[in-house]
Image 1 (cartoon, rainbow, N blue to C red):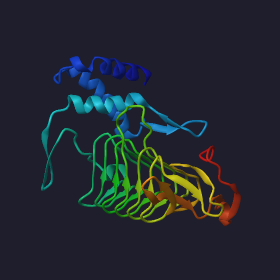
Image 2: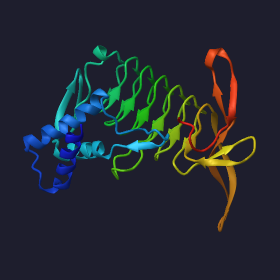
Image 3: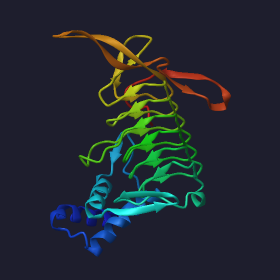
Image 4: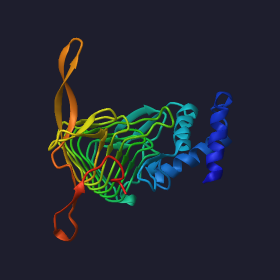
Length: 274
């Protein structure tokens, strides 16, 4: 894979001189996108320290694909599209259930057991096994969604391609993202989180311990918490206004192992993905 990474970087460095008909360059780009499509590689993953590691070269491959691809007519049954990127196929063979009206772009990945109600998954996104992408939910480019997650109706998971080193949204395993939530701008949701309906979580949204009023961090909901939309007053020159924040109703680690319920200590702002 290191050789392919070097080839993508070399193509990126001379992208201005590339011809759309360069079959050798296009083959390299397609090989890289193929890794994303099968889940063999991911745009982002968690490192040993719990931080998000961005595989920037795969984002460059996606950007090169858009640059090199030409518009074409895509027909899927009775539907017609005009786009540069083909849609995924062979869902049944991969154990993915897709309801009419749902679509996923080539270069995205859905694990076995994923259910897609009428929804959309963009290129570079990763959706883990047994996750439900409910009606009108969208998973943006390069977003990383874990296993056994329920993205409820109308959820918007933001995407990011540029700048290439930008961290995408990461949602852990076993989460419930409530209806009409927005998670964007590199926000992170830990394992086992329940995000209340209508909550907005971006990289700059304060995350507050509702029991103490303490600001734990911004744009990161710790594992095994319930977080709901809240506001707090903030004074500006023009007056006092409500500032959006995510209030943690249960700001603790929770384990359901062996059918028991343990409080494992106050949530901290780092290390909770380990």
